[in-house]
Image 1 (cartoon, rainbow, N blue to C red):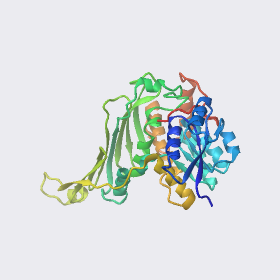
Image 2 (image 1 turned 60 degrees about the horizontal axis):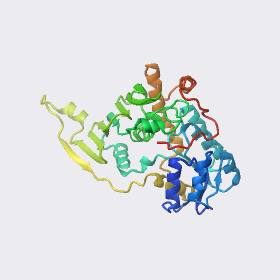
Image 3 (image 1 turned 45 degrees about the vertical axis):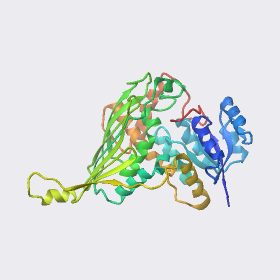
Image 4 (image 1 turned 120 degrees about the vertical axis):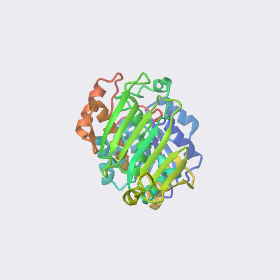
Length: 386
């Protein structure tokens, strides 16, 4: 039985190096940083200089063949997450992938199927699920404190990025290299949390600006309207071109509304549920008595190390997995639907038509201003994935 998980990191760019730094600092005692992999010799040179005792490999295949790790953390560009995860799972390794799960759901579904066939642990780096404020919000919604949801609104525009950010890596902000813009790079956490807390919508109508604020070919401004199975509606607004930006998540239900902003949860709670008040009240003008409550939130936001520790403890002890890799497809369903809708000027159902979406994406890849092999088993680039 394993006493510690020997972890290999594939992709030693900014994110991979960040993971290596806290692992070697002893923040996650259950995990040993046991190997590094990158196709860029300069990155491997930096690894050797900084962590001389850690073996390095210039291809994933060499790492898999070396038999020096129990699992891998995949921190490469988006297109490579599923093929590398599939390879690792087939080699009998546990897998933790950085967000997003991939670029399109058809590819990610194949990764999920490979994980289901395997007896290995598959997780995803949804580190925002460790934030106690989101955990508390989910608990309130799942526990029925708000009653039936009527409306969800998330304005997440504090992802400001300058042109120099996009110019810093050739794969960034291209259909061929990244597969999308703000929806694929910055927003996977919010899209995951949105569906984790409120459930998946059934259909989407989205409007996007492609290169609206920057010299890029992908989306940097999105406004989307969604509908849920129970008739509730929602709006999601995001951008990398607003300064200062906003991060405000509001959920309205039968028993009031909850607003999450500035790491605080405010619950405007109806003393009488709105539907009951509507039925019983006979005074004409009037509304339910409402109490404004600040919801106490306890616990530490352990972020990336917390996800790695939870993943390792699931391997070692069977601890419940906070961010199962198979759930990565859910937020991607929403972002794929938003792209699909913006491209076609149509309503798009969830789950998306995977073959049609793939066709539309490939049309954009073929005419991309930056050509790069995408979707293969070779690490393309290992820049920061944020």
